[in-house]
Image (cartoon, rainbow over all chains, first blue to last red; front, side, top):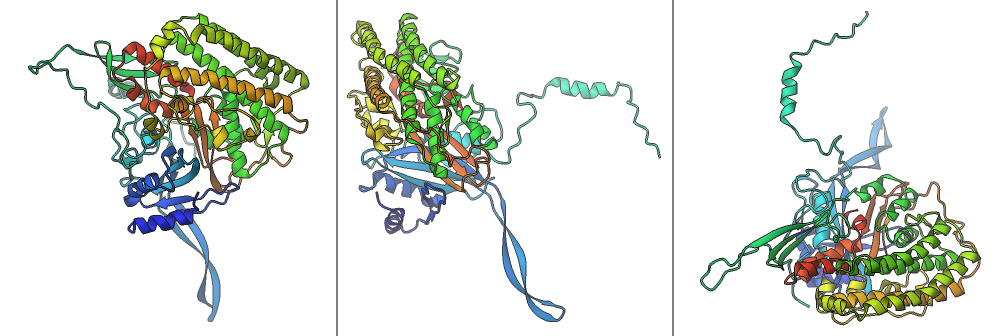
Length: 215
Length: 389
């Protein structure tokens, strides 16, 4: 199979508007991946599937990753005047990398028996702009998996034919696989009329004696 | 191939009209499951029926959902190994192997020769018992109540006894480790396994006499639930279902993970993609598994079963990401792990084969009777522990 650099070069030639980066991976296996901007994600995926040299006809794995806001700190040298003498002082500069959600696709070729090419797309943020193009129109195998990513991470796949919750029940709110998700104390709690009755009834209870504070 | 994938069918079910435009008959909506004996667990199908014909079918699941992936992200790498047993509880050995293989890829661990052989033996024994049980179950879905399943379970018992002897547990084996296997097998165990394997082809002959040319089996399975080759590839179907549709894609041959390149075996491939082909592929795969087992049991060398460099406590692989996959009995079982250098995974994902194989359940069932939908579901081979995770 071609190297990722070759694929990137051919993609940029075929689709000049696409922004494609190669994401490094430093573990032992070291499979690098292609990061594509959401706007041209569908066109890039279609190219990868239909290209005669690649023929990535099999979308094996689709998954989401949550990257919350992260504080990055780097040391920079700043010139400062200390006691009338100009000195170079090290300072820690803190920047906040805004959080995003990511969808990762592992693509293989069944006809040429090669792969994987790892494709990733990132949403703008984790709240109101968590949209990505759906690749289900290209690979039917992504249908349930994109539904799962929507269900557990809250990525909205535009163009998905049937985007509903799949593992959690329909009435569930929240996205349990996000890093900052806090599980409720009682999943099955439902407000009942008794709650109001209990609040009303509390008026009639004897007032609890407060603990006396000795001074 | 410039087309888009076929979208899932029948979002709206329109009433059937006669020539004058008046409604003919009534459509019946049936919620099949979750507590139905033939849905292989807590699985539900929302079916719309026209008489007995299926006009719409939506699988509904998640009843066993326990967010396995979140659990895996909150505990250490090693502590997650027993949880993988619970995914597909028929095949805990292959689940263990897939997870161990992924983490070995992530951390760059080597596996000693003897451990590789033991892994192959365990995986092929798992394949034997999974396929045997599946055939028992789905013949039961066709109405052969009890007897074939009991024969299948009798054989499975012999293999589970072997697992119990070496790992201490019959189903939740928790046997593989990163860089090897937990305990070594002894010569007595190998002799016993040789005997079980030698007897197995006799059992398959016997089982085949009952089923392969049985009139009812032929009538109920041939040209029922046909899955075309293009759709199978496009919908990421893997395992025996894919090969029954006529695609020669077996990870044991494609990826050659472990030491599978050393064994002489073939990949059976079907022609029609119907239920009968799926049944036959599984029978033939069992014959190939027996061939692999015979070779592995003959050639297994002496030596250690753990990589001495592998560290079980305080295991912190370097930051990075990895996707590892094996050919499980149900299809491609993959694990995707992102490490951030801490003792537990930043992202841990399971690619469950039977979950993805359900994508085209509706396409296979449309136009068939409701009784066929049961058999088609049986031939997909699902385990809800893995579908729901």
